[in-house]
Image: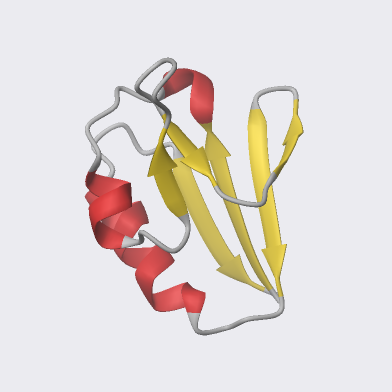
Length: 76
């Protein structure tokens, strides 16, 4: 299982995560912040749990590219 978490409130809209992992992220046209696709919101923390381990590599690139360090990914 791969778990991706995004703290969306702190997003600055740089778009790096979308460039690194377009299968996981997209930019919102409403507020210019990133959206973690197919995620659940819990008090500003958006979480995606997926059995697809192929997303880990792209997700890790997004974590490294994020200048405000609001994305985390782990394999469980």
